[in-house]
Amino acid sequence: MARPDVYPIPSCAECGIQSAGKCPACHHSLCIDHFPLDAHDPCAARLATRVTASACYICGEPARPRQWSSEVYAHYIDSHACVGCHRAICDDAHTILRQEDIVVRRDGVRSHRYHITKRYCPVCSRLRFFGGLIGAGWWLTGVIVVIAIAVIVAQVALG
Ligand SMILES: [Zn+2]
Ligand SMILES: [Zn+2]
Ligand SMILES: [Zn+2]
Ligand SMILES: [Zn+2]
Image 1 (cartoon, rainbow, N blue to C red):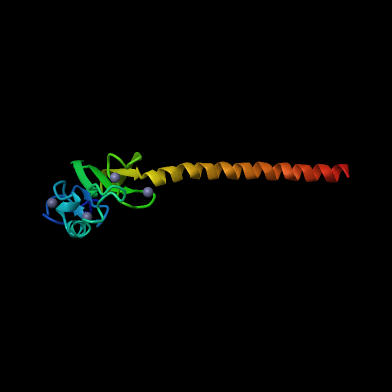
Image 2: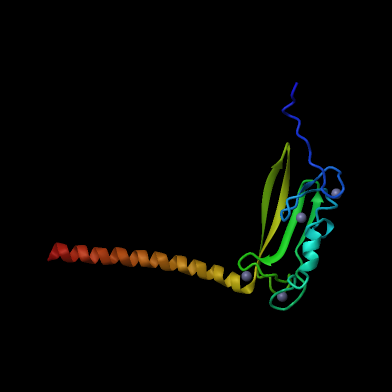
């Protein structure tokens, strides 16, 4: 008889033992040891060819993307790049804003928690602020339109 409550647990693409999660870049199932980007192919090969791209675009400090696991179900992903412009940025000087997103993905009966670090470079953190200003500008435009209509209506009514 079929057992619908039994799910096969995927095995690690590198060593074949029980996997702990999926790499967000290549979508391979991997164990804790092979989850880091430089521990499995094709991500390790891709990382090696992108050495020059993994330096801060402002100061040239190393900014290599990293990922690691702290538990079988908890994985940390840090692209070390700005989410606004996708350029690599260093940790100390040029990550102006840092946020952590937690994404939970189910994998059969198990679920995995992915902690994703989002960084903003100096330019994009300022653009976020201007995004707010543009939003305020739209509100102002709306108020002016309402006043203009009120004035026209009043003129028509009085005329
Ligand atoms: Zn493995
Ligand atoms: Zn990968
Ligand atoms: Zn920098
Ligand atoms: Zn940016």
